Length: 119
Image (cartoon, rainbow, N blue to C red):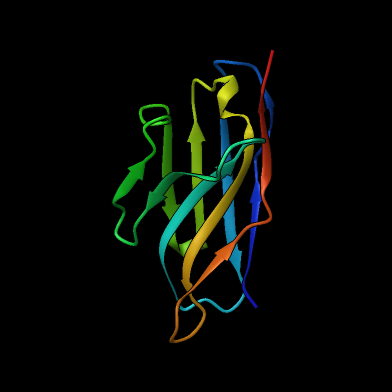
C-alpha cells in the first residue's frame, strides 16, 4: 500500500522561509506528476505547484517567483521551498502524486501539513 508523508510545516513570520517535504513509500513502480496543493479556511483548494516526471514545473500566479518545487526520484520525494512567505500563504498544504503502484496509475494524497504565516 502506498503512503505519502509530509513534513516541514510550522509557524513562520512574514518574509520568512519554509521547506516542505513529501515522501512516498510502499509499492512504487513509477511516479509521473508530483504536486502541492493548499487549502485555506473559507477558500477553495488551490494547486500551488506541479512538477512533471521530466522536471517541467508549473506554478500558481500567487506563488511564482517565491516558491520552488523540486523532486528526487531516487527517494520518491517532492519538495516545496517557500520564500518571502505572506500571511495569505497560511493554509494546510497537501502533496499529491500521480503514481503507478503497478500497471495502472492512481492519485495519492498526503495527510496535509499546516503552514502558518504570522507575526
